[in-house]
Amino acid sequence: MTLRIGISARLLHQPPDGLGLPQKRLQFLESSMAHWIMAHRAIALMVPFVDAESPLSVNRAPMADIVDLLDGLVLQGGIDVCPETYGETPRDPAWAGDAIRDRYELELLHAFIEAGKPVLGVCRGAQLINVYFGGSLVQDIPSLWPGAVTHQDTGRYDRLVHPVRFEAGSTLERLYGNSTAHRVNSIHHQCVDRLGQGLMVEARSPEDGVVEAIRHEGPGFVLGVQWHPEFHLSPVEEMQGLLDSGPVMLEFLRAARNRADRHRSGAAVVHPGSPLPNFT
Image 1 (cartoon, rainbow, N blue to C red):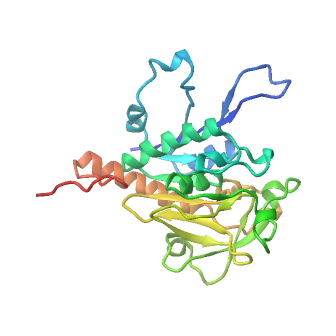
Image 2: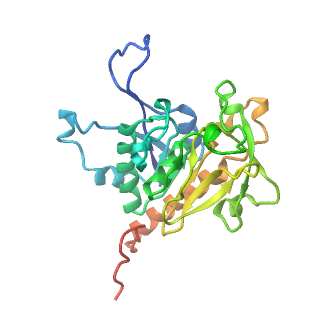
Image 3: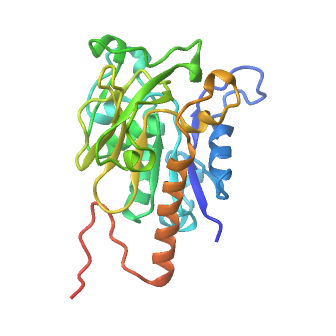
């Protein structure tokens, strides 16, 4: 069975001139993300956003039907999470984020977690996982994290690289080992502040302690990484030697296949955050 992986959409509320779609909200999938998933023999399918305020949303398919059609969810990177989503106010208007996208992705995230289907969050996606479980974010690493190294360089974008070190006993340590620090790209100015309930830190930047990966400790697979593994596939010379993006995707797809196999066999599925089934 070929796995079908849903990907949350990036939203562009005000497209720039020249695209031929003035005053129309756009939803899009960055191609590297699709390539990363499909390079492992899975199908990548973007899950479109439906505006709850639109009259067209009245007859939309239930979220449960969407989840039933898919085997796992990947949350893309992109614009900041809105501070108001985790109970704060923006310290700077530039960090206001996108509350509309937050609501859309949190609904998706909740539905997949309750269905016991695996979730993989990338960059913003990792931050949203932390917020979903009640955590908060550092709104700006350069101004609010003393001693921080550079985690975002607009000019270099995905070619800015720094090391990460995996925590002892973590899933990432099991996949990659931890004898030396591994190199990843870095395209973020925000990070985990207060860790969400039931989450554990999987990786940190060894130079300043910034959290670089998190995982939910409950049943199922919910993992977030702060870097962009999909960009590690680049053939550009300066991107060589970065952490292999394959093991993370294979682990996610393995969880998706195991969940699908259990479902077909009629085995009980334990949902994170839901009561345990009564086996008596």
